Length: 386
Image (cartoon, rainbow, N blue to C red; front, side):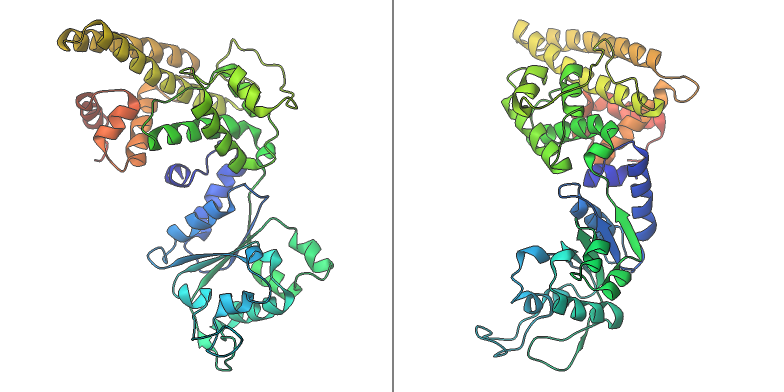
């Protein structure tokens, strides 16, 4: 589940997200068709990609088709292919998306936009494993796993006569429902930190922690565009923020004046009206990110004071060690010792960071703000696999 979170960005500690991750693991290895529900921007394509990558077809083709972006007059040709001369412009034989995806997976995004006549042919493909090219009469066998995604209520579309009932029943064998961001607001801090860290790493830039006041504004914004909007916003404020930390003033300026955040006691680093496990995880992540930023600041300042290097290195090592020990004491005071020890938290953090960088010790050490020598010692100490 941690690998799914890190690789595909399906991040969260809420019950609905944990259930979604468990369901993805359970159904990924089957060949059964899956219907993915969710509003625009919630990450339907991420879920579909995870389903393909965790299946036995992961080494075969994965084809994405946006049914709403293809004109109704050419959708059958695009899906099932056509024969030369079957219509004006058909200058040669052509494979469709289903033949291209043979032995692999196809995602029919916005399947609710398919014309009714095309739905009939799709149903035959699902039931018989056959397609017939436009202009041909002999069917061709295909072996494709079908994933479908939509932001429409297909049961209502069936009632309105816009979607075939038999196709709906065939598709809804397994349904994955991705909740809107407003329905899992407790996940927003984790997502914001995740997008901030990923953007910093991708661009090789220093991480900018989000202040509690700024996080309060982010958590209580509307996010009608869901995760897609949140991700784009985090990247924007990262670029636009002139300070080394994301300040509430910058967030407020770019969120707009229509936001109405709830009151928040800024004496605490995270919201306290949450599940204890969620609060613990947010607190630890926030403190680790702060440590990383503080060590970078100390290193830069010491470099300016003593350009010769050796004295700087000695001072930096001593001060950074003291800083980390102090920060660990602060974190430890907040975490219930009966549930997790500081060593367990440190071990999990190192293991997750190693997974993220595919075992690269150099990148892991940089991300955690420690030397490679210390990292190797920690790996041996905790018995982590290289």
